[in-house]
Image 1 (cartoon, one colour):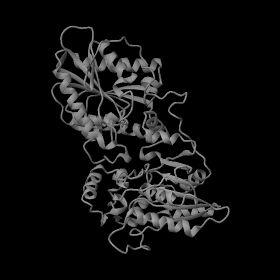
Image 2 (cartoon, helix red, strand yellow):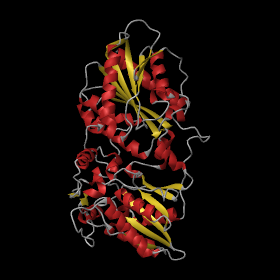
Image 3 (tube, helix red, strand yellow):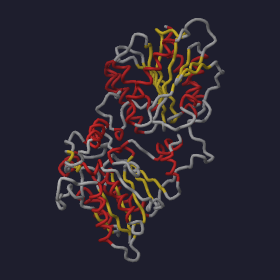
Image 4 (tube, helix red, strand yellow):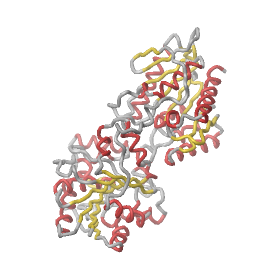
Length: 506
């Protein structure tokens, strides 16, 4: 018999699993939801100090109570923050647990507190300050009914389910978020399954793309003992779709799911593939973190500055400005008589957008000071996750910025990024664009989560009368510049570049 032991995420306890546990039991499994000290009413805290270690002991107590009778296979399920005590318990009882299921959560690491996975960037910074001052007692108040979106996507939660989530919510003991997780490595070889809630912004394809960029942590996910399953749900599937969740947990226990392709496998990832257009080489001048591709033309020339997406792991090599996509775009601009510019910025994590924005601003100062550049005629062209950086330029357009362009951009924060109320929200910023021309290149086969942000931006642009020009690649995927080297792609690239050049020289 499979025995599921389920650990709830932040602000939630055993009750949140009620329907899922009943469905698993009806399907012939045994299911136990762990009551967590200081969160569940059945386990009141004996003192103000409730730590991650306390919740690890709560999980161990259930594992020990279940026992290891013949034929009983224990599957630990950790949702959100709950993966930290689940993994800590698996590390202490490696011979009792047969699989760990990561339900829409990050990858805990030894010595790192759960705080690192808190999606709300502002709150993360505030709590980090408390941790540095060793103020780890007390609790964090749960979100209001309208505040859950800062912790994950509420997609598919009915009004009644959202009311229930809010009613069940309890203050989260700060020590469970601020105490570092300590692992011995005893459970490192244990089979694991990641269940990704795609409407929270992450899919198996997205994980594969990130692993392909060279992140050593994500590269470990290509281990054949690691599988992935998807749920088309927001962050709380035990409330939005308990039946589907129960089904996917049974599949996870059986070892079903997709496996990541190793980075060195025969299938070449998108970013090192050749650019779809054959463009002539042009002289390159490298200055710090900026490259200028120079046209065969006299006098100061307008510039098109290409801003890569991300997050990109800090150790990724080559760096983005040397990827064929960025080089191809810059050479295409140079072939049109513009100075094509690429740069590396430090968007290594979803908390790095402010730092990346500062890098872009510094690059623009360098570019505009170059005597080969017409400082009064500059366009910015953003790709993928770099699209959030457009918000600053939409809100405060300098006179020298003649055009914004974006290819396959993310134009509103994805739910799991914790940036919904912050500075980097182009959908909200476009109303302040003041007539700034925007050239938007859309991929018809874009991932649904990113496509939703693009459509929201288009709608907001139409509502405010923004100067938006759409260039569509109906059969293109995210990264069509290298993934889909078709005439449709080549035509779209030429059309978008002509539009940008027209705004620069007009």
